[in-house]
Image (tube, rainbow, N blue to C red; front, side):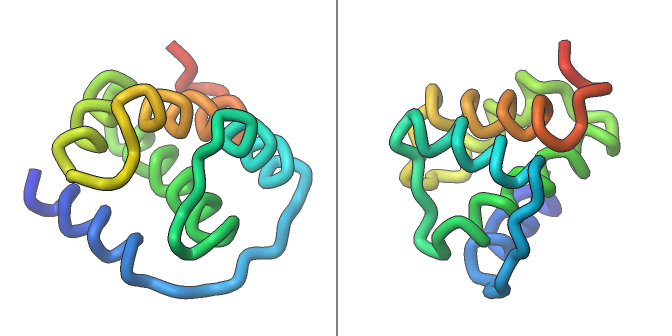
Length: 98
């Protein structure tokens, strides 16, 4: 669990510029529709979405990711975390949609 929280912390502290592709555009539209933002802007949201899929690939369930996001203490509500996870799955890793 600590490694997951460390990954969330690293994500929130890292910087970078993301090039928006069609999947990114879909993901961003879905999270923006819910009013979800990130301190790093769209690049931070895109990184978060890809991180969610990486964790799904590591065997974490959608519900586990939602609970981890809520425990992390971000500015995101439980509903926001759910939207981020589900939007990431739809855009980047549909094979994990439950």
